[in-house]
Structures are given as C-alpha cells and as structure tokens.
Length: 464
Image (cartoon, rainbow, N blue to C red; front, side):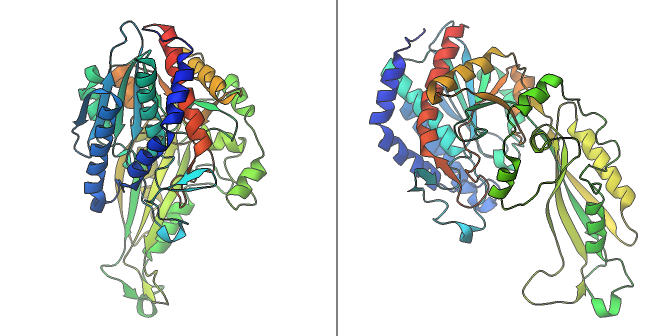
C-alpha cells in the first residue's frame, strides 16, 4: 500500500493531540535506570525491556517479543501489512550510560525535568528519546493513516552502551526474522542546530585494558623508592609513547591499512567546516590538538585514533600516602576507519606496549575485541530519501556527515542482512550525551517525528 501525501497532515494532528500523553510515556521510560554497565541495575534493565515491549504492543505492533541473548533481551516488534513495499528495520537501544557524577546534575538524572524547551534526563537523547520518537510515529501513522506505507520492524537492544557484545550473534541467528531492505538508526545528532544531517559512515572500535604489576604489595616509598620500578611510572611511559609529540599515533603499522580519503569525501567534509574555535570554547578549551595535515572535523570523524579512557593505581584518597604502588591500570580504545581490522589493530597496539614495557614490572593485556568501520555509498537512494524527508520537516537543506562514534552492531547488519544503514538522528551537539545534564531539545523531538513520518512515505514510494 502507499499512503497519500496528505496523510502527513493527519499524522501531525494526531501527534499534536497526543503530545502530552507521549511525553508522559517518555518520562516514565526515562525514569527507569537501565544502566547496562552496572550489575546492580540488571533488574532495571529487564524492567525497561518489559516496559518497551508493552508500549510497542499498545502502539499496534505485531509479534512483539523479548529476544533472549546472553545479556539483556532485545525487544522486537513488527508491522508487515504493506505487500510490495520496502521493509525497514528500526534499530535503537534502551540502555543508558551511568549517571556519575550525579552531584553535577542540575536535576536528578532519572527524573525527567523540562527546562527551557529541553527534557533533562539520562537517556533523553542517547537513545531512549529517539527510540520513543520512532514508536510514536509508527503509532501515529497506524492510527491516523490506517496503515504504514512500508513494512516496519523494531529491534531495540539493552547493551549498546557496553559494546553490544551479544547482539551480533542474535542478528545472525534471527536473520530471517530481521530481514530488511534498509536499517534505520536514530542514535546520532545534527551537525549543528538548524542543519539537518544524515550520517553516511561510522568509525569502528577496538578496546583493551592494560595492567602493570610490580611488587607483591604496596611498598614504603622511603624504603624502596628509587630501588624498584614504579608501576605507575611504567604505565605513564607506555601511555606517553602511544603518540608522537604532534599527535600522530606512534604504534608501528597503525596506519598501514587506513583507506585514503577520496577527493569527494574530503569535499563533503569541507562543506561542514564551521567555527572550530567556537566548538572548542563550548567544551572549555582554548586550542585543539591532533594529527597533522587534517582538519579537526576530519580527525574526529574519518581518521583513526588511540585514546586513553582511564588510568588508576596507587593512593588517590584525601591527604598523602607515601608508597610505591603494587600495580597500575589503564583502559584504551581505538577508533577505526575503513579497511582497519580490529584484531590486527589490537595485535599492533599490544605488540608495541610489550616491546616498550620497562624492566621490573609484568604486563597483562586484556582485549575486549571490537568492530570495523561502516560507510554507506554516497549515491544510496535510502540516503537521498532521508535527505528529502529532513528537508520537508526542517525547511533546511540537509548535509551528509561522517560520525566519529561507533555503533557496535552495525557491521553485523551488513553481514547478516546485507542491508544498508541510514543514520538519521535528531540530537544536537549540546545534548551532553554521556555527561551530566543530558537533554533532548523538544523542538527536535517534534520536528523529528514529522521527518520520520515523511521518510516512511518516501520509502513507500520507492517500491519493494
């Protein structure tokens, strides 16, 4: 079936009439502390899955089920009553980052509060709010239009924030149930306010932890300082040696497989160059830093990185404690670009760390694996349909972007389903995702729903 274009008027009216009802449901969704990284919240994660499944049923979806994984369940629902039309799979996640440090939140992180046209809560933008938009739009089109112009499936997981470890095997096992022509993900942001964006690529990820062991116990620094290797000193040397002084990754062979950017790709990014100094000021910095020969935007989206995400060891409490610590630790991640294989990158980083490890300590490296980068061809009709829908909803010309972040399951969709991915998100750069005072702009929330309804109409007109 294909719905008439004026159905958007009816959908708009339905969404307006049910806006407060929708926000009440979203606030209840956000109130559930579905923190996948913390085992203490395992029950909350499961309750969130149940809440979402109930809401999908209420919206009119069929076949709603909790698909078991070795981790939190994935929530599935479908509406498959548009023969001859394309099938779209909506992917998102209902888990959230920890709220720490909670003292820096203006209002409680799991009590959604509206201030200045924004809804503040953990998960408001990443990704509960954007998942909720999809759910409301599906319900609105079903209620106002009598049916969807496409076949629609939902797959909403509960461990994206910890790497989607168990979802790729599920996607492979459920490839028939999940079969689709396109995967649509709203877990990203506009390039800037008023600049609607479609992302045509994601960086990949590789992660590891480094553990440096020295003496069997903490030692008195007066008795042993200067006579034994200090694990914190050894770790600091390892970390410092990962980069050259000008910001290039110093790991031998790290850039060997990196695909050279085409002139067209650099031109797409060049059109997006904004006020880099202003972007830095927004995060409290006076100057940037990074790999020579590339713009800040290129460094943060299409070039690979090695980053230290955390270091700890020794005494960090109040006052002083004069010791040589027994051990030191660090968490590292690498953002990857096309043609970089996560395991090969980890091999090279591990070999470099072992080669440079100072004498007098033992080194243990725990690898967490990773996933490769993803790029969607710039001539994809699904990307162009998304641009048309965004243009209609936001009355502005959309831009194509590349995301510097990663979504772990995306490569699995390509392998198992052979479906392209459209990254059509509605966040804004100042949503403060992963930080205190995360929020969702309610103007984006409203217009984004119109854009999604328009997108389903665009896809419906493409035929099956």
